[in-house]
Length: 425
Image (cartoon, rainbow, N blue to C red; front, side):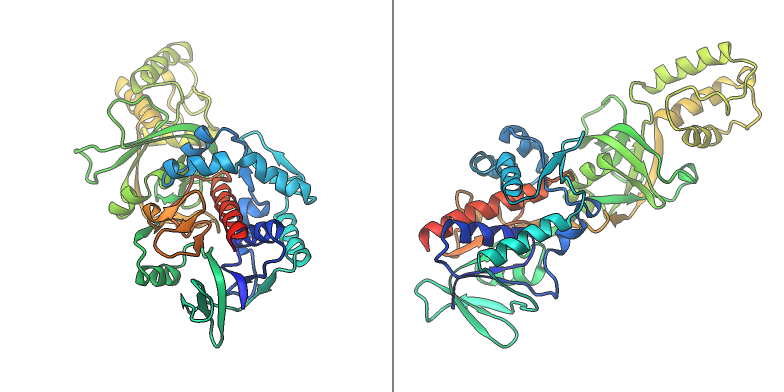
């Protein structure tokens, strides 16, 4: 018998447990984790450094980083936001730092600092952490009024309240669906684009700043195209900005990851088969790039095109695009035809790649989908369908772009659920 059972030993589960025990020390709280270890996603977050949150302290701006849950999170972020999270960790001996792009990390640059903090707090507050406790089902308890019975492999546990913090667990979603909740079908979010193209050969590791936009164009064999670093010529389906990173398998980086988050359902509909257009130049259209290339042709007539990098882009990228424009390595500017100049301008500003598939972004897998937001009270994160059942983290249909925003959703939901439970239990 417990006062509160928390299903899921991840970030949201631990944060909820700690907040409950802090607010009401009389309550008996247990975390049920199905695996042998806890806080696995915390460990790999931010390349092993744990991107705790993002230094955006204005809730109205903060919600703009959530493709799903934007409207619903405004009130919760006013009640418990980024500053509160930073205070929580720093008061518990984990000093944080804000990096140039706004991401917040432990000064130690190690996710173990966050894990150690949680484990220390659960021990101090006498929260039971039960590993290898996979929840098979939960149902109404016949021993606790309005309570719940949680069934593991061979035992039954009763509690007044339960918190579901299981992330993207299809088994838990199925159980909740059977109990009356509507589940928005899950699709991947935060993924990179798989591209096999000679123009990206030997460019792995190159990063350059871009702006992005997704267009629907009838003259392509697929229905979607993404255009990077160019002015919007037609109404885009999606837009994004930030660095793009060339990888061994295609394209990644914040610009691509934002598109994958905002376009999670759209790109899933296209079966991850579409064209991406890249404008490698931040301030140029095809026409203005062509005009500058023609000027360079006059000024640098005796030099080869290969050795005269006309724009501030990586040298290897310039060379690959020059090759793609069918310009020979020994061709001088004076001998470049107008047609080849036009071709090079298009490679620089309308570089079209075929995307065929996606890859998970490191170990930080995020899913769009989950419990329908209309069925959650966002003042308490309690289920509107199942009294005394609360949610925290990715189990609900909320997800964010990369940068610490998914953790912030977990902390906020966990805190508000914990306060409601501690007061009412």
